[in-house]
Length: 350
Ligand SMILES: [Zn+2]
Image (cartoon, rainbow, N blue to C red; front, top):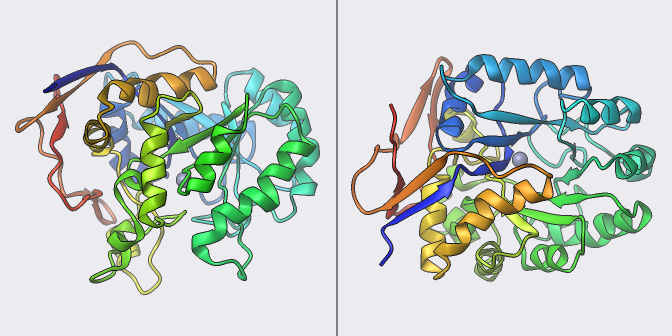
């Protein structure tokens, strides 16, 4: 049995770092294991211009632990007022890696998102010409559509028509949660990819709702039935180049999670790599973890594979992951899968 696995330092290609005190509290947890992350732009107010992204990037770099070479890859928040030339210039200057589409109202801080896709088609066309990828939160917000169906309906109503109208646009369907999403990404051809989170590989909706509600397992898109979780595991562990890791680690203070209207998001950054090792091992596919976490995403974004190494070790030992992190505004629980992880990341330096 393999009990050590050494990988190039991985990429987290979908991450929420927030800002201010929360940024300072959570950033070291990502920088500890990941060499790069694609940082989501849904701050309040959102990151909408190249100048906003440059400012946010500077705040992230300033909050890094001394000596860390973690590299934030920035995204812009697409609005119906986005200036295509600003996007293209920020991408060409290396300030921005991708643009994020949130349907208005789909998730945390998405009120400035897009209501009518037709209103952003001009920007998307310029992005296709300039090779700027579009990352999508793929859920419809139509209140008539059941929350468990919103991803599948989005693919049919929005994603497929959009890709036909804007050919050549590179698209990432973020945090895929359904068998339909997996099948769509797989069949999407060149320029189509999907990210998968660690928590959606271990949770189905029973974990969230059966035997008592578990607010720390509430995220968007919400976890689905077990057969969808299995489809995600099969996709992630397949080695297929179109699937790669985006943890969607999304910290909210416990006070905001454990509320009558609790926030969506799982703070998985400290445990994501250990969970992935366990899931891949259980699937008999530990050898594919490098493709999923280190190679496929880099290739999609045209980035070199990271230098440096991350070693995962099976069995006891290693740094105990804290159950929660203290911030100046209150505690923040780390995602607990409900079982003791068999793997841990070997921490070689302090
Ligand atoms: Zn997200």
